Length: 190
Image (tube, rainbow, N blue to C red; front, side, top):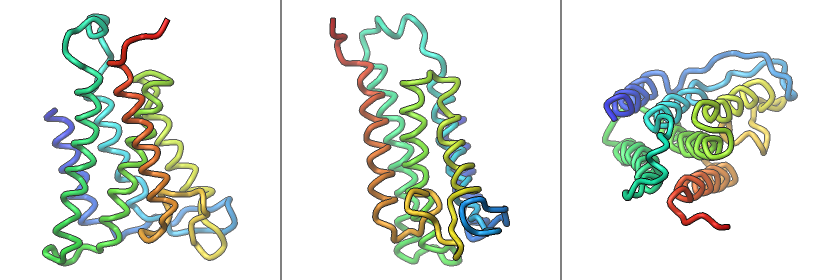
């Protein structure tokens, strides 16, 4: 828990300072070069820290009386909700100097990456689960922008804050990931 708290606080500190910054990267998706926003990569830190906090499931957890998978699901929800709560003062204008759309994109990307990491955790296991959101961020950064430096329809983490498809897709991935994680407490079917 302390690691997750430190990484999440560090994520927001860096997002507030460098949120509007971008990295010029060559593009293979239509543009010759694109200024990829830093906020595309920053939400990977809390998503990876979350899976690190889960650790490797001990064999005893499968026979535990407490609902370990439900606690894991609640921890993932808490990280995303706490991160969204930080956006509220920014959206209300109480914190100056921070772009509202950058804060919204950070929440959306964190939901997307957390959902992918949770899905990866149930499919690939704990150790390989963080590769899935990292690959998405890398693919979007290299292939995700068209000739006008606008994100393609499928490049949700690179899309503008006003893109409804990216919000729906990120929410869908998070929901699937939370469901797959909570499924660990469901009775097994024979």
